[in-house]
Every structure is written in C-alpha cells, then in structure tokens.
Length: 209
Ligand code: 5GP
Image (cartoon, rainbow, N blue to C red; front, side):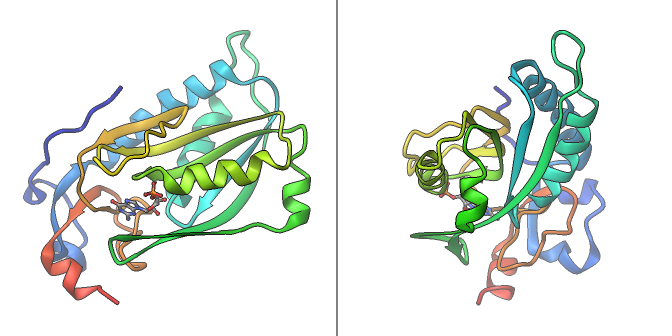
C-alpha cells in the first residue's frame, strides 16, 4: 500500500506555464508514477492466468494505460513467460466539474461486450473515488460472463464517500483532493500535464463549465 499524504511545492517542479496558477501543489511527480507502474505491471504479471484484454477507461486512464502497457510488455510471469494482451477502449462518464453526478454512463457496443465471454479482462482506470463508477461497470461486465475481471487503478482516493470498493491493483492511495494531470482532467483541461497535481481555486473557477 503506497499512501501519499503530503504535497510538494510547485516551485520545485517544471509545471506548464499556462497551468502554473491553476495548480496548488504537486501530489505525485511524474518520475515516481513511472517507477511505481513498473512494480504494478510486475504484480499483474505474477497473477496473470493467460492472455488479457486490457480495457482502458477513457479518457482519464489513457496516459496511465500507455505507460502500464509498455511496462506489462516487459513484465514476466513467475515462470519467466511474457504475457499476451490485446487493447480495448471504453468511455465511462460520471463527473461534471468536480462533482459526481451519480449518473454513470457506459459506452460499450453489444458486440464488444459479447466478445468478452470466457476472456480475462483487465480494467485500467485512472482513479477510484466513491467507487460507484467501478461497481456499475463491473456489474455490467459480469452479465457477459468473462473468465475473470481484474481492475487496476492508478489512484485510490481516501474519502468518506467511498462505497468500500477497492481495486485489485493500484498505484497510490491519495488524500481527498480533486487531482489533475497525467491524463486526469478538470473539464478536459490539465490532461497533458505530466505530474499529478492538486487543482487551485483559481483553476477551478477558470475552467468551470
Ligand atoms: P467514482 O465513481 O469512483 O466516484 O469516480 C470515478 C471517476 O470520477 C474517475 O474515473 C474520474 O473520472 C472521476 N474522478 C474522481 N475523482 C477525481 C479527481 O480527483 N480528479 C479527476 N480528474 N477525476 C476524478
């Protein structure tokens, strides 16, 4: 369990000029994220029961997904075998501004879902907050009888709003702030920033819809 508790001063990092006032501080620097991903990929490889369908939950997990897939390509099972995997992408939306709408929309075609029967799925998510999105997604996927479904999330938020859901693998446990960067957005902004940062009040107002 990797608990991130404290923040780092943004002055100590390279932050894109256009976002400098829009973040409060750095929570997880990019280099630390990449290093942790190598270990998470190894943990996934240790448990792999065969070829995987690696399902990226768009758009937030896209950057994490790319780095995780690169690490998984190099990872080996305990008997020193590489793991075959294929790519899948799905859109799941539940937030507006920084508030959960409680209304989870999942965009998957019936054909895609039916092809999951008997397959090992690895769901790749950006952050588990209340857990509602993942529980809804897993509930839906179960109906299509995959052989197994495992979930890897880059972050898990420590929040009193949690429904108790914990993913099979995760990178970091983080405090209850709204975080942006490394694929995580605030109304589509900040995804391209490489560190995971805490958004500032200035940023929340500037990019509100
Ligand atoms: P949950 O259903 O677990 O409450 O929320 C999951 C989704 O909400 C995540 O996939 C993510 O898109 C969004 N989300 C939750 N917390 C944050 C956050 O701190 N920052 C960003 N950018 N998105 C978040």
